[in-house]
Image (cartoon, rainbow, N blue to C red; front, side, top):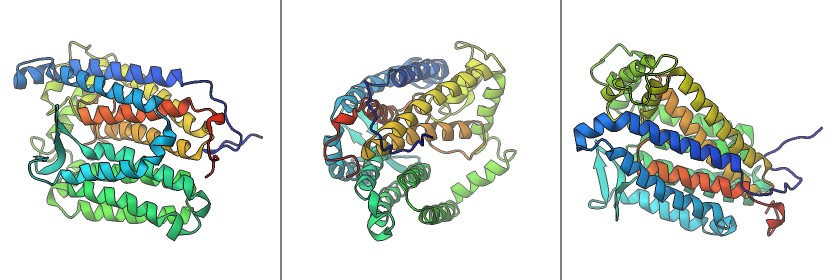
Length: 383
């Protein structure tokens, strides 16, 4: 009987890039742009006097992101692996720059952005996903035979992740810090860390998250609002109630791309709550279409990780798949009220240059790994 593993012993001969994966990325990007057009024109007209304001900005971000996608898809990942320490330090430096006046940008009491030439701002915590994925993939590829020794095979990896999580949390970006920890824990688990150690990290992480939630009144209010949605319907619960009304208004077939009006009542609908716009426009039928597309993308992405014969590339593909799929499911849960409100955008859909740029970088890495051939191995699969 054949046994499937993230690291198959038998090399897999890949004939080329995964065209199905590329097609799913293209379709998701297209649907995201159409949804943004449908959802944001009213808000953009009132605030900026241009109904296509967000669509234009997103199109530019997608164009830049596609350039990075091609770069990551064609480059030699062995070179990227050698540059992992520089990538780690470089992105960590960008995260720290958010605290420097004149460089960092503060919005709503949070310092999550930096000013960059030709861009209004960039959110380094998005790029932290790439840094952590590359760091852990490289570390576990090297230390795969030392995972029984936590001092050598786990603690250094945990410290590296905690550095990023701590800096991002200090930016008042609790949701991004928690999600980054989730990606890391997933890679710890799939790399083969003993379950008792994985469980210990999980318990410590969950306990720390709970302590952080109860350390500020704002997060406590959000938690109370989640369990008591009837409270403060014109304040902290306004956005989620407006989202649920928009979802309900979509019915089965939706109101059509040009007929979605209720979504304009959702603050910043073009960002984290863009899926409410898609649901009102396309209805339950549209939700099924999106879930099928996301499922197809996830199957292709995780399939790449399962089949790749190189440990580093396999872990990279797994991390990229978790980052995109997990973030998508988390956003959907928030939009429909199944989880407390967070600031996590919907990949391929939400307006935001940082989010779409990093999502396409992750997709480029996945495409690159999908075309990896076993005879390209240099230095051994299990170094």
